[in-house]
Length: 453
Image (cartoon, rainbow, N blue to C red; front, side):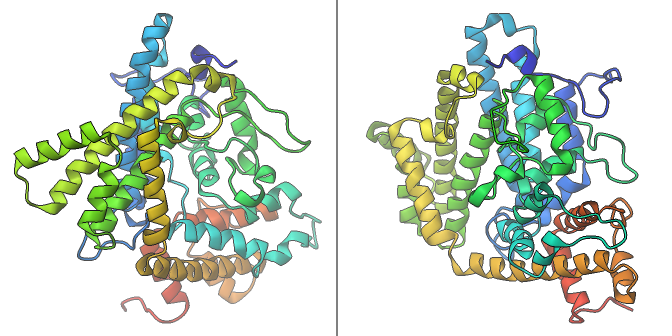
């Protein structure tokens, strides 16, 4: 059984032997501020969420999504803390009062590892190695050193995953950076690992929590926090989820599903009538009448404002439901036996409405022409960039390779002696790009765009 006192630690990765810095902020607030002011977080403003980056109508990108998830996550953490402190008053003098700060910081970081073009970018990277031009690297042996990819390292590449990449971005010792990466607290780092197992357990779902290169870092964090380790085949690693992961996941689930519905309405993919019905379905008939009567009294005629109000009511409803689900399942969560997500355990009416929204999203939104077009273009751009950069690191003495490698910042270990490190450096470089930067580089490489002379 995990316990809250051990689970909530302000120890920082890379500064284990150093004292804490002192100012008016808590260590977890420092995590939040460090992320807000970071370059990878700023770059999220030019990374696709679902719909293409805004033209005349503004829809969500990864940055606005992360900020909204963080806001909902803070409410989830604060409400869970308040209710569970009534059950465990002995935790009042511990970090338990800071659950809101930990969850909100983890929510800010949860998408940092996503490559350009959303899930299409992830798939492009993984399939380049699993079934594309990079598949030959599985059995490649360096002629001079005999170095080759281990089975675990190969699994990292063919199951490339944004969640694992976020953990790497926050913890990896990039060249010229300090040890420990962002030097985040153990509890904040554990809160972003949605799938706490190694890539050789990813299977067909392609989900895992950390690359081979960060395996020891996660083990150190998990063992320090007392996260339960599950039995797994030799050579694999599998832990129970850190409890606060459920709150980060719930905040993400709430925001992406409800905000995608709102964006689809703005883009006229969904009609106002359909959108209203989808959102009002979260409530009992009595509560639904109250909401409609209140909207009538407000005399708001702007349909977008009506949808905004309904969306806020739904988010508030789901936030309260997920808090209740977490509190009721505390023992199972701490025992590492809880199955599914919090959304799957909320009461019947909002759960049915949420599932209806999911079905509508897959049927009408995620397969809409604009979304599919950006996925097609993104897949092509990412595949080409990965291929050219891999060819460059595998043949660094070629003239064209040198031109490409000279574009790469020195923080990326693009000339590392080990094959795995070079390939991961390629993915570090490309996954850190914005959609705009990746597209611009692709055009320049293909000679369809030239720098101003």
